[in-house]
Image: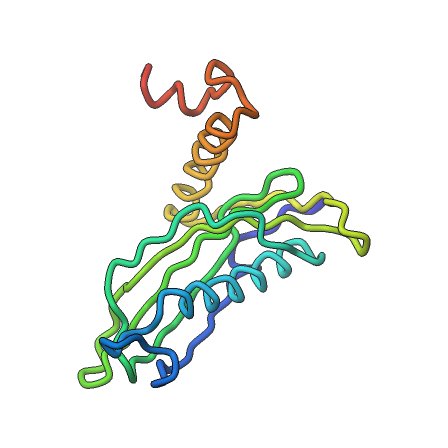
Length: 170
């Protein structure tokens, strides 16, 4: 399979925060933001794999800033690493201030998707070839996150987690 670049999966979704999507403080519901991130990540995973993709896990979500009513929200997602059948998707959420137009990072998340065939059986995905410094950093960190997840789930022995060991023995 031909390796793909993160830019080939890049997905950008922009929308406005409406009153029905806010909590009593007039900020975007966290669940609404999670749904937006899941949709963007799903599109990015499908662009990379050209397969049906399903959410396998939400590995990390950081709600760093509240997103007020009327704000313009942009969700940017791209594959940060591809494994055999799974893909890690890194998501950045940007907020545009409704009064000043200033754009600031509000949140970020990391999702894992699995590519499946028409019967739901996991299928192989193309490898990823990072280009920029940020893509290379996210690519390297993805293997550490995967190994940590496997160790915590009891699917990998800590002694086999070479990337994690390197953090503590270098």
